[in-house]
Length: 273
Image (cartoon, rainbow, N blue to C red; front, side, top):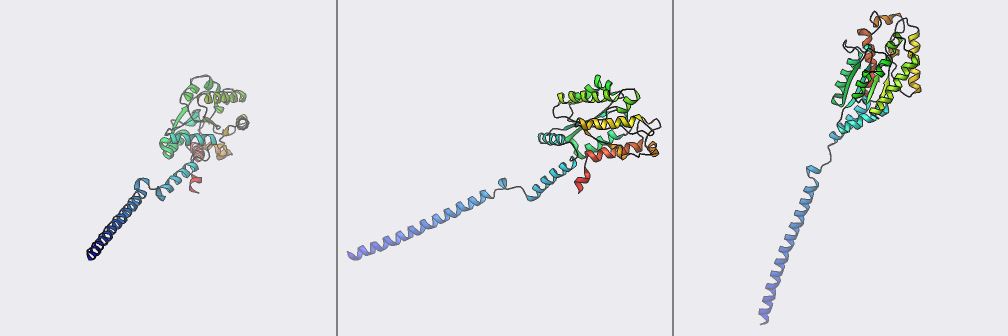
């Protein structure tokens, strides 16, 4: 009887050890499988961080855009970026007299082409050329056409030379500008106005003073002023850049004017530095 009990106890121990070993193996396998699954989830492609190359390209694109428009007024730069995030185009209106050369490959179409090539669908540029005085512009449908476009930025050549030829004084010219600015901001409170003079004239006397007054007026009213006159010859060779009547620039004059404005609106020197 004693031998039988010892034999039974030995068998029980063997069975217990066998079952314990099997349980340990099963538990170890289960833990290893869970660790493997966890590793797989953590390394899932859908949750991987962007590749360094993608992050670098995104940062570079932002820096390039910031550089390109770095000359713009701060309000215009900010609004441009806001519209870009929304996927909406930034509207730029180029407004002025026939000195723009809309149909003669003048500075206005050259600027429009450059902006479109550099900024693509992010910008919508329209040219509004009118053969009117500043008073006729603000009191007629010409200004209404510009406002209907709802521009975010207006580059205005305020008909100063036309006013000079039609005995419209400096005070009236400046009042017309302020009236247009008020109407512009009523239409689009984020809109920004840029002023620039028409082209210079060879041998003029009163006209240069009008333009100096325009520059001072812009400073007093905190309106950005693009003074391209410094890019033109200041001697008798100026006539080589104007048509015979001096009403508009010629091809060489348009090139000077266009180069100045393109450098302002597309700051490539900052981009490449």
